[in-house]
View (spheres, rainbow, N blue to C red):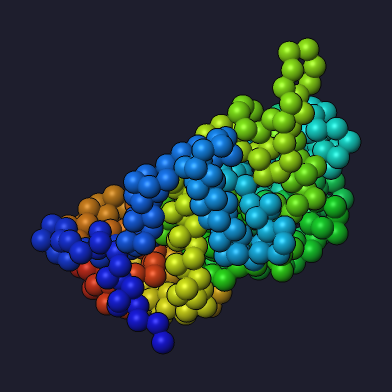
Length: 424
């Protein structure tokens, strides 16, 4: 049996008081805290083997390169890309946003004729369609909306059910024979709802479209297997999975990565460069990793992946489901509305809520004064807020270090909000 109280003790930042109260951190959907193992891994890299990777013959360069690639393999295993080619299906990026922009830029380059015959599968033109959902984070919405503007493709979206889940009952109407790209969130960062992606993937592939998954809110909380899911590409960030900031990963099926033209250019991604004719670029993943990589962060992210696997993703999911049940009790308080499914089914411990008559920023300050950290704003997901008739909300989101008592502390604090602001 996993001792989650002991796991909490591995997070030094949580051992402090905020405004005189023990810190209750419920903002993991924005960024997770880091265990000692991850903090130590990054610091130890700089203390012992710091050097450029894939670009030196000396011993430190060899050691740092080995640590970098071992970390890539751990991350590949975490997401089910652990077959023989698994490491070669993981591209290091600056984060999920960078990974999604990489794809949108590469598809745009293919639309300009770059990449040759193999890249034509990614090319878009007027009359083609790009499909997302209304639940998307702006990091999905905006890059592909811009891609539609640049190529003349139509931009469409799958709508939501009343409680904020991505609909799957009208996919044939939204995803058509003209659809070339479908990009959908695995878990809503506002609603906490787990998307039923299987029928979406099936429909996308039936019409020959490329399917892209935003896995930012699933990789830290659920056991995922990109091979089993049959996604074409997926992007996520290390800082949400107990790893460092400044690094993320892009998964791609090997044959698709080989066909995809590069999006960023510079050192380490080119095999042969000339003054008088076109360069020859490296095979993936190096083709997409121009410049100096965030090596220490990647090494620490590999430690985070291994740390999560040692706990067991099934155990993490079950633990956070218990916390979600407590957080959903916010909806039992008079004047508070949950944005997303009220049932603790096919969702994670991310619960956004609106307090009638009180601005979210005021709610956030009131909650913060009691030592509780939650998110305030539109959570980079304005369309889903409009779906609920709002511009902003408050959001509590759990991590492996949270306890039922943390959730209960928030619920107890929330009971006094409307009375404090005299709106009852």
